[in-house]
Image (cartoon, rainbow, N blue to C red):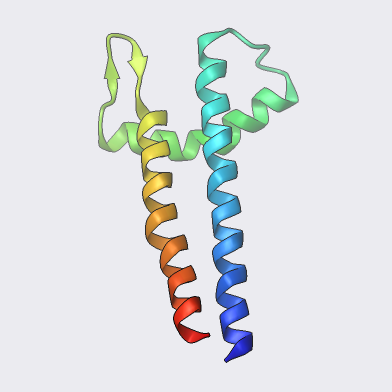
Length: 99
């Protein structure tokens, strides 16, 4: 049972780090949309390539453009916060109940 508990804690930690990292990349994408960065910059391309599939799915399902402003990054950040509370905390609670 000790190994299962540690596995659940490790899984929760990895998921949490991935979600927080994606949240910061999404915030960087929103900040970059306020300026006109060089589209050939490798960092800008990486941020765009990582976030666009998720943002596109949100935009396609719920039109979040009001007055020329795109609110899909806010929706993605709220979904990430929800997933952190639901998934990560549930895994940590399950691991605590095992130990």
